[in-house]
Length: 400
Image (tube, rainbow, N blue to C red; front, side, top):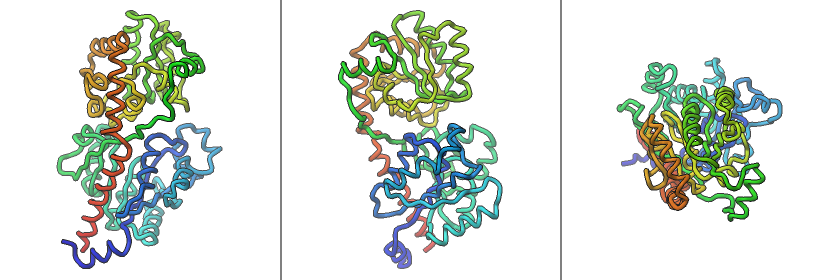
């Protein structure tokens, strides 16, 4: 039961949540877009205030270093403005404790913040640490298997003392956290609509525009070139498929530390005409449109937006049964989930879809329906709002 103080406090004004993103400054992907839409969506129970770093800060992170010289503000800020999401500019130092305490104290007092909701980068540690010191509810959105990376024991200790509740993007991530933590699992969502559905003639024209033969089958993988994505396994799959089938092209979109070595191995295998990795591209949607099949070879994938993106475009997805993809793919219905490390089964799944256009069509239709019914952005926004509202309300009640 609410005390009179709590009732008066909640009636007086909406609880305010300080959103600390830690996003890369020069990127506006599904992740950034989703949280802008989350904070822009009408909500009678809470307000959001973003803490945005000054673009001149040496601590800003860029996907492309050359962007530092051209950007006047992080890319997502213009979307905050156009969606009428409140924000303030303030840079969190990596090392200066006093500077950070003063920054957060000013924000907490001036804007009457009730909770801190944090996501990426070193910023999330400072936000949770100082938020807890000032008695704010601290909510940590866990996007990947953080405890399996560097400094796992120290992170466990930090989580125990400075994080009140976690929101995890998958059950896989939830299971990596100690059981005593307050954890909520909310799968990410995506807009089910695509910009425009293309007819056969338009798809052929788009393929020609991209320099792709209209008669070949396209297998697409969209993933950063990092060790976790295991492009070396993808290359083995390519070799096996190309030994058994002609008229197949593999496209690997994304950039990263392993791309150069991947391309060198492709050239060494003599497969440069069949395996292309153009790097980071801005027209990813075009490739989803012309693809026949999508794959993902990651290990311990925290979520995998590429799975939902492929499903939105009606493309069957094949992935290993590790990490979060098995939570998104219904085996045999929207794609295939293959036992971890079983390259023969993965190869057979690709071949089955290459050889069976009717199965590709049915799985694609099922995938589109699954996005609309289970993974839409609207459902995700409703779930996050409800969870944050519950957390903040309980926090206010505990003060009363």
